[in-house]
Image (cartoon, rainbow, N blue to C red; front, side, top):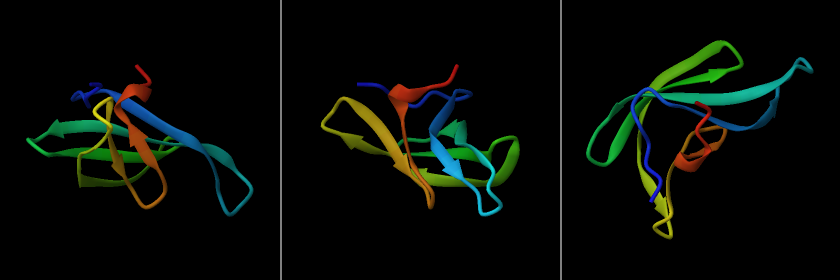
Length: 79
């Protein structure tokens, strides 16, 4: 199963901002806990927040987390 790794960056889909800008939302895993991760969430190069989320799994093939704007899957690392 694909798992979140500390230091890796994971990207979501293209996100459209209210001012007509277009970029991606991404997370960088800062710390992995037993059943959650602490991550930094960014829109383009701008930090949105640092937060913690519970890790979910999809049919035992990949971990994922959900945020207010997107879901991030461990198989979609950017590194």
